[in-house]
Image (cartoon, rainbow, N blue to C red; front, side, top):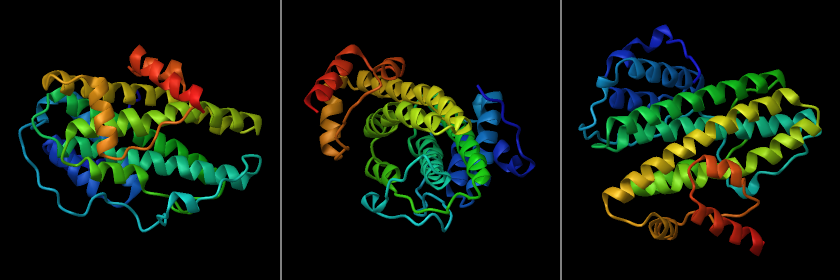
Length: 283
């Protein structure tokens, strides 16, 4: 686990109830400040887990998530792919990855404040995810700066947060469709992206992908853990429940190739992996 120093301007977060503090940080618009405060909050709560008030039912302020004026958010179909053989193409890729990680900070913080009456470990898990996503965001924006660009320089899309909005009233659906669907797609996408970066000679960016993949396996594992916890509590079969929720909330169709080793490490069972292998064979 990465060690994160607590910045001085996060003192109020360190003394507030963890879930209320998560909501406050989520509303923040400056990405670098949000990342620093998310890391600090996790360190504070890890040192004092009793600061989690799991019973509090907090009210959505209606301005979520806080984000900067840029990047401009556009339809995914309008975003063009660029070659990784050029610095410009790799800068666009790094920006897209940074945008994913910024959204992932928001998603993890949202899970912390939004869903009451879960075990304390649930909130600690998602605060850890927020901290690690913030670390990834910082790695990517630092690397992006070496290409002469800052976060917000290129257009991006809002697909991850759109799924958060759809699942805002159902923690079971959130666990099914954000970590173990949308974030799990990153387990599949990361190795080929890393390979192309290495082929282009950009080993510094490729090394960041190694860190992200390692941590994202743990994040998807957390999603699987709480999805199955909730299924068990409601006496639901996880396989049929997932299929029902994916259809109900219009989850994106899964397409290969799949990173079966990473998915296995992230807690997908053999029945789920066989189903994915069947999808892979159809393509």
